[in-house]
Length: 422
Image (cartoon, rainbow, N blue to C red; front, top):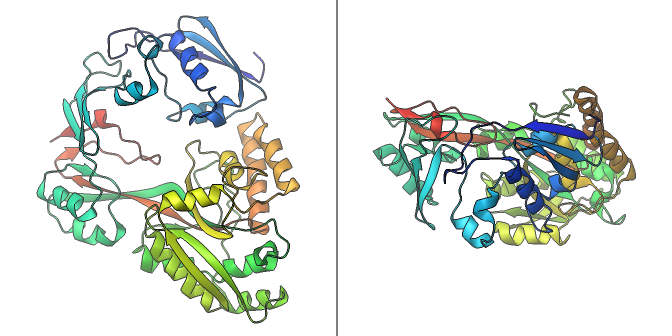
């Protein structure tokens, strides 16, 4: 085997939920679909040169260059589909009639109402102890939490931070929280020399002028963790030596004056109002904090659909973003926002030094050496304040005390086959 070839031995005896056997043909079929121009697996597909069938339960995946995070990228990012079941069916049909090898079969889906699942008795993992499960999308926080407290709902994710104390008072409910992998940060216009944030001293001033500890304490009700860099500490490439600059409005004013803005400056700050935890409120707090260093902020809080459309169109100069990197590797996280020409590089940064460091790090086969190279890249990003990290969001769950076996995962996936009622 060469550094570009991965051999996968598929588990034998696995059945699709229609009774058909799971084989290498299904793997090849799925990766062929991933080559289509518009799909969620594009970042994986573009790394892969070829997928070969060795036998009915063995496949080789050959990448263009050494890419040691292939397995991390595949895990709960790409989902194998049944060739026999999907062939001849439309994308719309497949989307509404999912069929897999997992512990539950979808029996009914009523859009915006509920999804009913039933245990799959022939699942390779065994039959789950809870035989029927219903998922209900309840967008209204008060309604969802009332259902949890009254016992109508057994488990809910995303308990709003402002309601955690209320939920904790319910005798039949426990609150479980853990750090999330999603980081919230600010990006800036970088491609126009005449724009203030093209100046490193202005970027440093903005960083020093934001009191993130206060935001976490007062806006996030103590939940969340201030960020010094984009990757969290459990991600490859996180640099433990990067320390978030302390809130220092005096230094921030000095840096603005040195950058040629002794009287401050005016800037538009765009945030979402329906995407991240307390996103609009965080925008208001940042605007108030920056006003103390002479930065007059015009805050614009808009729905995520409009906000992200304008980010992709490169229309915004100073704006909020968030990202949860499912590969646990900071190469894709950094590249998605800072690489020249990247879709989410709304500030249009073009830094040859960054691009070269990223490309070199992403091809290092040794995970240890890769991590070290990415740590240096994160140091480069921090030293040049190419983004302003804010915090890592919390993942907060409300769980009935009757429900056992729930362990929150950093990816926020739910293994319902491990749950049971006591």
